[in-house]
Length: 347
Image (cartoon, rainbow, N blue to C red; front, side, top):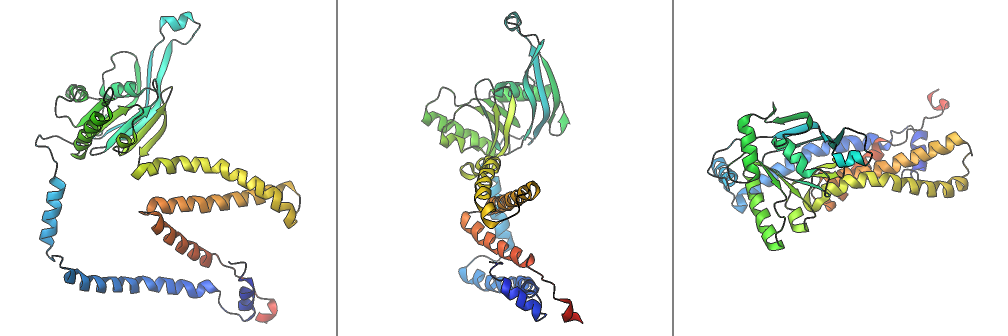
């Protein structure tokens, strides 16, 4: 669009006019207070015509009732458990030594870091042997053998006291009222209906403000979408993903899409370069060729990641499309052309 407007930019230069963005920016800035005034006037008129109650006390009472709904009667203290660079080593079994394994210890967990927050139902997933149960046992303080390295904090306090260890151990078996609940595959051996009932109960417990963590292996879509956060591990005790799931796993998909797009865009750039570069007639030098390729790669990745950013910040794709087109227009205005006039115009 900007290239097609180049004749206009040159004419502006010849007549010593200001560039287009010099007129667009003040108009854009002035629209903000005008839109705010219109919104206040519209809200003041429509709010009372619709019949909403004007008292602040009624809204406060409704908020208190809503926030207290579903709370358990038993008192507890919401706690956050965090861990950083957790490593776990065990002695090498005799069978492995006889087969030629020379190391004295086997590392089951490799630099695992993360946090589990109150009121958030977290899923700990991974293939068989990834170290899910081992990680929960280490965090709960149930591992009496081996060597544990790293920083484990409960409520910001390093280490677990005797009372906290007892509460965490009992919480795993769901017979007390703990602040942190560890569940090792709670749906194992259940059919789909029973598993859904169990996970619904676990979700209700998490909504009361408790920290709930579940290890789970190959859940169905209904159970998987019941979780709020995910920690995905692979074989060898290594972490792949730690973060929120989002609606219909959108956060996880966006996370892995970012890494996948780089080689995909590289393939596109190579195809475009070998077709368009000789057709345009650019100089066949190594520096210019790779510089042009780098520019094209950064440009496409910029537009791609900016679109992902807008999708992640907005509630739906329609709003993201509207805001993206607006920001692209603003960016084009801000980065327009300023063509210097000939010296004769200033003499």
